[in-house]
Length: 94
Image 1 (cartoon, helix red, strand yellow):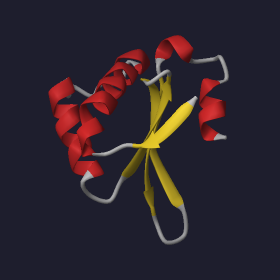
Image 2: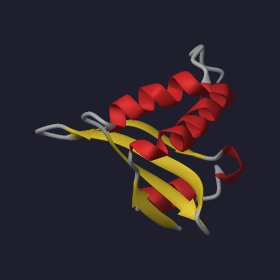
Image 3: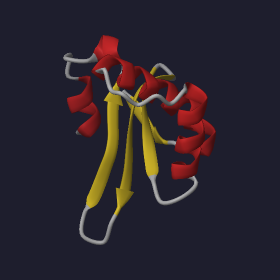
């Protein structure tokens, strides 16, 4: 697994994974992928940072977080549904 810091130009990719997570969890968030991408771009252009986790150059997950003075606030962490429960999230955190 490779990882890299995400930029505003990665907002659509991360938003697509976020949209799928919302669906997988049955969350009531009604935002469209385009709305999620706009929100993500705002976060990434502001106080949040993100890392994309990739296999062979393809995105398989991400972590979105904010550094606060006394801690790090992990806002979102997701691994593509087909890869969940196989240790991918644990490896990404490590």
